[in-house]
Amino acid sequence: MCAKKDRSKDWIEQAIHTLGEAKCLFDHDYYDGACFHSQQAAEFALKALHLSLGLEGWGHSLHNLIEELPDVIDVPEDVKQATMGLDVYYTLTRYTNGFEDGSPKDNYTRDTAEEAIGYAETVIEFYKENAGSQGGHPEKAPKVRSSPGR
Image (cartoon, rainbow, N blue to C red; front, side):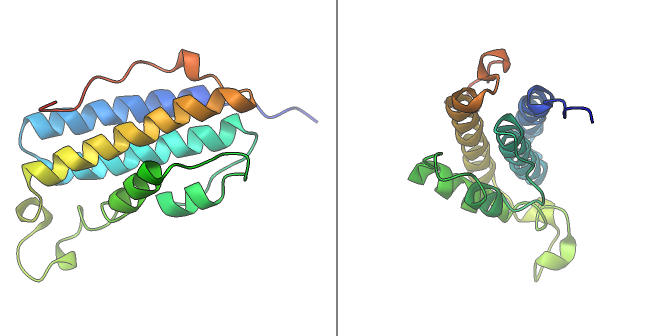
């Protein structure tokens, strides 16, 4: 039987790439897309953390991915808040029937998108702080560019 290859580095690289996409969308006033990509970046970072711990995270709920971490990982309140804030962007940013009026592009603002990007950065930093403690590779993760407007 072959040992499972640790793909956490691939996942965290994709998380940081996706965060860059969110920032690009933000810079061009596509705030719904920036929110969705921020959620995706955080999801990828949490899945990277799971893999670095020898686990496999499933699903798209960031809250659930946090709850499924082993008890040895202390999850700070700001990370919990970030995951709860981002969870709503997985579906609502993409489907018009999530709103009474208008499409997703009409229902997200610059402030909302900026907050979402900040939340994603918080989750990526959480990965970097915790992946190495169980054999992960946070030192190999690319650097995160600062948030828009900060």
